[in-house]
Length: 246
Image 1 (cartoon, rainbow, N blue to C red):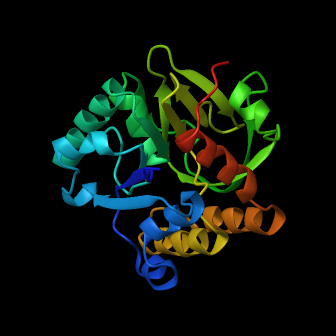
Image 2 (cartoon, rainbow, N blue to C red):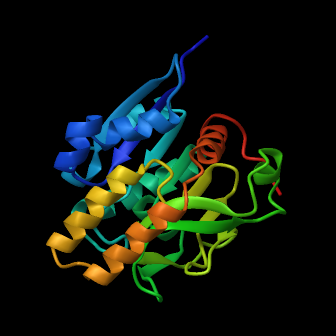
């Protein structure tokens, strides 16, 4: 049997902490999504490293990571990524977008993104998946699903024919699907609490958040646990199975 092959499109530089503790964000994603007998490749797209045109068809699925950049920006690599994502859509390749990846997918397919109306969302947030979506119901995904969040941008407007499949009190589009081959997640199913704590400290050092925001975010880490098992089942089933139509 031919081995399944996946690619991580890395949209951020590895932090010193994640490199030291996990070997980089690529390893964090493979730890969540990878299984024995699969091949996983890394493309540092924010550094201009993209899969060759002739190689795209070799992959069964792609994962787009978070980023320090804005999905509504026009950096050269972001424009190149938009072109790649439109091609993946035309080929009906499975594509999973996380945080920035969620936003850039929406933009590539005709949606709009921008600064979040309610500002930064950092910490563990409880999102509310749609009970009418057959994939979520078949996997018995709970109606209140905790996930680690760290974003100040959001999807403002979905692409035509896309469907919201999860919301939260702060964010109207926590998850969306587009056909059977594209799914976006605003939060970070791959993050652990220690990764977020390190990121909060970096945001404070660079004056991107205030100390009151940092303390509020840390308080959520003490009161809740992200449901890593549910997120693992959901993401793996989407990438490697068939996204059931609702």
